[in-house]
Amino acid sequence: MQQLSQIYLLSLLIITVSGCSTLNYYAQAVGGQWSLMTARQPISDVLARDETPAALKRSLVTAVEVRDFAQQELALPVSGSFTDYVALDRPYVVVNLVAVPEFSLQPHQWCYPMIGCQAYRGYFNVDQASAEEQTFKARGYDTFIGGVTAYSTLGWFNDPLHTGFTRLPPAQMAALIIHELSHQVVYIPGDTAFNESFATAVELEGLERWLNRQGQQAEFGRALARLQYRNQTLALVAATTDKLAALYQQQDGLPDDRLRSRKAAILDQLREAYVLMSAQWSESGPLGSEPPSLNNANLALFRQYNEYVPGFRQLLRTHNSDFNAFYQAVIALSEQPQAERQAQLARLTEAFNEDL
Image (cartoon, rainbow, N blue to C red; front, side, top):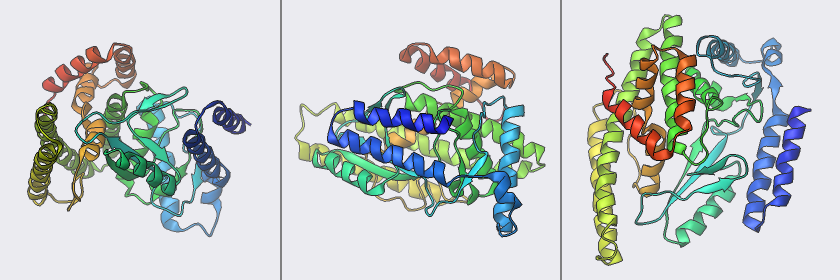
């Protein structure tokens, strides 16, 4: 009944918003969430069936163990999340659209009732995402559409486990479960970088504890290697965005074609530097082994998920790795004006040392 009442509330939103495109968006969102709910099966039932593949059973058992661990050892709120399973016919559950003006680094913000504004828009329907993308391209925006393995409904629904999780290696599945549960701790409308960096930090610190419990410390070394790749990529992206920001400040003095050519050269330099750097890594980096041409939207999405991770990890250390105390500090930080919390996270980032 709770799930039905929540769908009913979402349905009411459809008839209270204006604009055909907005109506279509909420209709596909409600339809997509409803399809997940009607296809869900209790994990216990899936495990009890003889015909369930052994590999899926192993993944589901691991997922249940990770969920319990997250609640007991990481103090994460789990409510009814990840107690059901949905078999998907695709490797992602939604796709996200990011759109950024051609000569800007500030992504377009989509605003929603109750959850505020976000720098991306999620679609269950890929065709609708592509149609929306074309409207932005027609206005000269840089755009990017990417598949999303999982998302959090912030406790509004009991999020199910699905094949996007169970197709992952065990350690990566554990990290994703921890990440999505983390969003139920704190959420700031309109601050994607804060929300995602916090969840990524909890994911990493929680994964270390999980793997230590499993006696798989070497696997955490591989997770740290992936983090190092991400940090090195972030440094390249940050340097590139500094160059682009300086270029975009010259909009009043340079013609668009000159801006365009200089922008393309800067982005080409980023791609070349990344390909050269990632060739030395043991696995594909966060932008892939051979990324396509990059643009403002790619950079905006990547920065949002990684910008403050070291700062949050340092904040956890200042609270002696006590997750309850850490969450209270993060909640208090979330209540500060954006400029103040960004400044505090910048100071924490400067103090962070991976080897300490």
